[in-house]
Length: 547
Image (cartoon, rainbow, N blue to C red; front, side):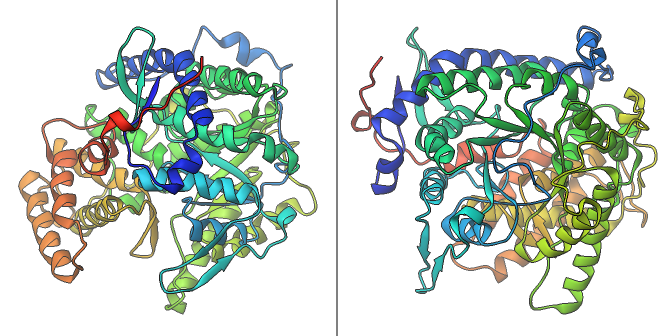
């Protein structure tokens, strides 16, 4: 049984229908226990890595890697050409901008670019429901009207990203058949509501129910998703194999199981994506206790050309193309500034360099976070692809990546500066403050910050403290030094902020997740539980469920 604990209004009633909630309940009854088992395995593997055991390619699945005969399902209708994808949250204004952007795909993000307030989650589902039916419109509080002006058949293909396995939806309570009650799985909630409301309409539109799968750490987690896809399609009478999934390779364990992940999802898989920012965060977090061997320098020194990042991206392209899957590149954080022509020129040059490298390496498409970046990214991929929809035929047989290559951080510049420390504190503080106010993607200092980039900032601070790093200017990076910077930034930003600012709460949270005795695996877990849960009295929210 699913019990609705969050507040109800017209928007939630449109999405949280008895039939939709019953479907989400059936998903939980069938798969919630397996999710818990896999999360327990994550903790075990994380402990092993922290205690000195390096990841390795799996010996038990060598036969899958050695078998050259199998292929994935590949692109579904509307996914054949993915040369530029725009990412962003699912509020109506951002959704309309994405649908008018000229990108081939819109990654409709309920994960790292969305602050998971109850209003954002349910409102995002309503936005998607309207977008799929071609009736999305929005009027701002100032009276400005936003409409989708692109012909419906030429709008970007929607690929929805649900929240990761590690997250819960505390506004829904799930009671299993043994009578145990716990918060619902955010993954099953996001997937279930979107699939229930939109799967058949998407197929009628000539496309399909497509998903980006975040934060996977093993092929067993991919197998769970595949079983969920089969269950969902059978539940509504849809042919199995209609769903397409693109998996983000954004954790170190997943990088060692790319082929196995593709194999488990082969009947539903379109490709893999190089989730670069979460991947860097995963590298820092996974080896947090391993000393200076894995210590990095300033955040802007961890580039896509350092050895471990080159190994990861080249292996991803080669793996995908061997199996008939698309390889999608990552997001450059640089964004244009319409009020600063010089800053925009610098941002576009850096984005062009990044996308030129990806297209040259064999990627079939890439991400941008701002509509103004689409022409720049498109030009680089057009130069390589021409009229071809992708370059899957480019096999990259020259790529030979070992386990040691994936862990080779020696080529990264390990210099830490006073400015780098200050920047990490300031960026993390400003991002968390915006997140607490319900905004999950934030332009800060010319970069697009989301939960993944904020995680890099706070985890680097902790890494430097734990390893007693001294900056190039001679400053010891310890809790006292970071606290001084945090207090100064808090005072400065609070003085400039409006009445609705949440900098005090953000500073308290940053102290906990970066400076506390424990190092939470994700900053969003304590932040969500403490600040974003807004529940009503559950007694009046319960819906009767069939079956």
